[in-house]
Image (cartoon, rainbow, N blue to C red; front, side, top):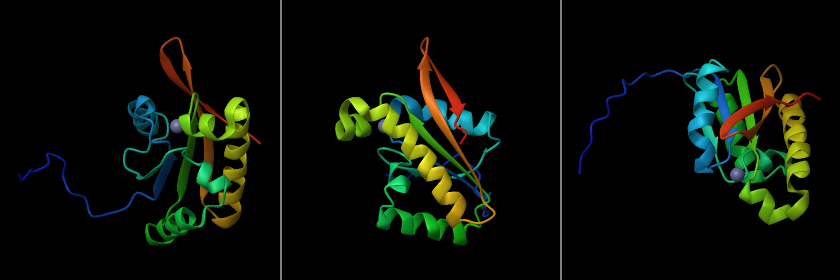
Length: 140
Ligand SMILES: [Zn+2]
């Protein structure tokens, strides 16, 4: 099979990065949020189970990749998104999962702000309200 995409090739980087969980239930809403609310029509993606958990946990392999992206793609803005009912957190932290997620998100925002001087880092919770996904910014 050979496939030709309709998307035009653009050989440049936006300086945007979004980090979120691979949970497919949130992916479409998250991409819309990035485009419409964050003005991130284009962005690098790090999509991994648990989303920004790896930043709070300082997981070496993924942090190495994130730091590489930050340099090579001249990142200027990073959006970290964690979502309600996350299977990764529920598996790992059981009933304390959501509190742990919120704590981890704050830690991740602070850590990246410290490590990546001059990069705007913002953290968001994706919640489900009345069958719709709502994004709420966390503040320290
Ligand atoms: Zn998840």
